Structure formats: structure tokens, C-alpha cells
Amino acid sequence: MNDLELSSDLQPDNAELNALFEAAWPDHTPRDFRPILARSLAWVIARSRNRLVGYVNVAGDGGDHAFILDPTVHPEFQRRGIGTTLLRKAAELAKLKGAAWLHVDFEDRFEPFYRKAGYRSTGAGVLNLRT
Image 1: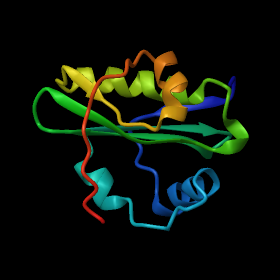
Image 2: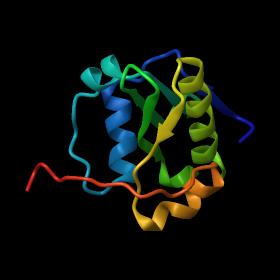
Image 3: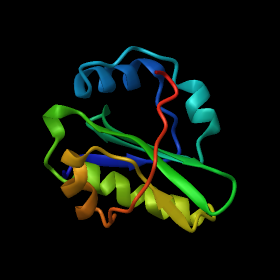
């Protein structure tokens, strides 16, 4: 990770975000990330030799709650601590922006990853609005 650069200032463009998501998530459909980033509380990106290799978005409710969305690391760069580093930086930014709680939803298979980053499981509910 010596050549890894984190940034929360520069907005990544659609092409590089879509390329990252296509590599990491097989079912990804290209989309316009600009409206998402425009509403974000913060985001963090990771670059290696000027290549986008990681991303996490932080959404906020305008109050005490913030939410981790879309943490993604390129498969070639996974299992190097980049995802955990992105989550920790995202937590710092959310706290700086006034959030008291940082939430994340995840599938059971990702629980070890989130535990390593300091998250604990809680009861929650979800409603699928697309079915």
C-alpha cells in the first residue's frame, strides 16, 4: 500500500467509478454518479498510481445519522486493508461533519470485514421497494 493515495476532495468521474464497480460487482449497470455525489455528506477514494482502486460514499440525514454506501475495492487490490482504511477515513469525515452515528447495511458474508473496521451488528429492518 506504499503507493496508495486517499482523497476526499477530488470527485471521481463517472467513467472511472463505473469501471471500478464493473470490476468489483458483476451485476453492475453503468450509471451517472454525479447526482449521488452531489447529495453525499462525504466520500473517500483510493488511488494507486493514479488508478481508482477504492471508493466509499457517506450519506447523511442532515442530523446525527450518516450511512456508509457502496464501499468498493477493485478485486486486484482486495485483502490489503484498503477497504478498512476507506471505512475508517469515512468515519472520521462523518464525525467531522457532525454525525454521531454511522450506519451500514451488509450481507452476512461481509460481517468479518465490517467488524475489523469497528462496526458491530445490530437489529435493523429493510423494505425492498422494487418488488
